[in-house]
Amino acid sequence: MSRIGSRRPLSSGDWFGKVSAAFILGFTLALGCAGLFRELMDVGEGYFSTKGQFAMWLMSPVWALTLSFCFLFRSGLRAWLWLFAANLLVWVPVLLMGGLRP
Image (cartoon, rainbow, N blue to C red):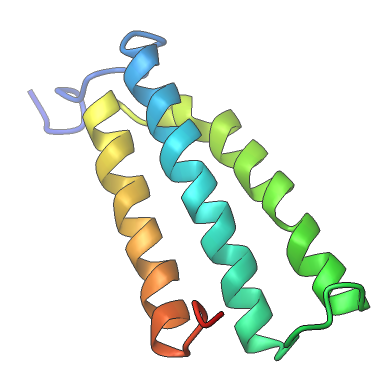
């Protein structure tokens, strides 16, 4: 049997693990994406500027897409691991650019 044929098919099983990963880590991923955009575009303290509003409203589509696509993971563990890795990829540059300053 080939390796491709031995893969576990996608299913809605383990839905709690997938949804909980998307709910928790998806939120932090969305927050990190907004923070990364804020740092890259040098929004500063201008929350009411166009860039500031875009950074703020960027969270909801990223979180919604994460919740929507979480069922494409083969297991809850994979969802947790991949979303954790995505969070690392987003949050490390934010922290290095000083994105958590008061």
